[in-house]
Image 1 (cartoon, helix red, strand yellow):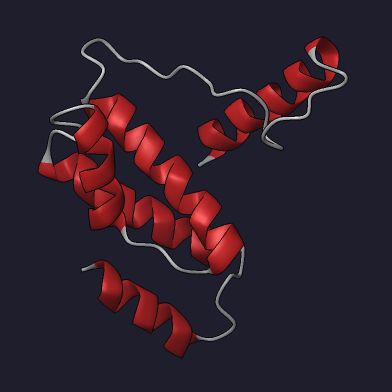
Image 2 (image 1 turned 90 degrees about the horizontal axis):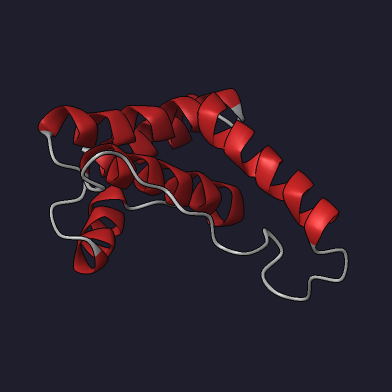
Length: 115
C-alpha cells in the first residue's frame, strides 16, 4: 500500500513538473508497470491500485472481477494463490487504515464479499 501511494505521489509530482496545463485524467497519463514476466507482480500491483481507487470512490470493490478484467488485457495476471490472497488482504488493510467503513458490521460485510 505504501509503495502504491509512493508511485501515485511521484506521478502527481511529475505531472505538475512536466505537464502544467494537463487536461486529461486527473491522475495524469497512464504509468507503465512491469515485472520480469509482466503478469504476476504486475497484475497484483494493478489489482490493488484499482481496488484502492474504487474503495476511495465508491466504497465498493470486486477483486475477482478486477483480476478477470486485467486478464483480458494480460493473460495469467495475478499468477499465484498467494498473490490473489494478497490482493484481498491489502484491500482489507487499506479499508481499515483509511476508516472507509464506519463500523465492524460494514467491515465484516466487505470481508465476506471478498471471500
